Length: 231
Image (cartoon, rainbow, N blue to C red; front, side, top):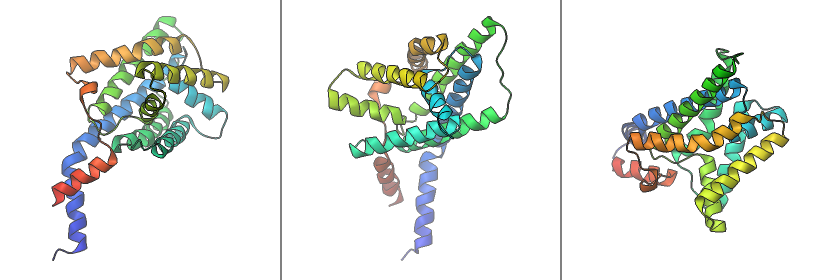
């Protein structure tokens, strides 16, 4: 009979073989989203909607920007679980690592706000492209979307409203809450609201990735897949 240590090793080997590449690519995506967020921040033209909310939350609590993103992401995952929206491995990693990367990269102190309005706009536009590419990198691995997407699906089920209406309502709510909490609202906030989605759509088409036709794996699916490969 196989000993428990060998079984554990086999499970770990199966996990590595099936998911190592996917997780590495997701990490690249999370890092890009973090850099995109910081480019928004240092453009000084206003953060994107959820960045605005996380910044406002950090200003009203002892949390850092990244910790605020982690805390709110955790809350959204817990709320989703109560309504049987199961997160994926990528959902959990998203919640944890984007916040870590934001604080880590910001500690490098290599970004600063330029004096020229043209350079500020270029930094903002670069932030949009970098963030959209980051979203593409972690979505295309199909290990679960971000925590906010889980709540979006939940609200869509409860209200039966169009998914676009639900997403827009969430974005507007984030902007209002972030502004009331003292977040950095500006023209960049408005620009991002109308450009990040289309930028992501263009990137997905360039790389022939069709989000609507793919299934985002949850943690139960992941466990079953590893267990099946381990047999």
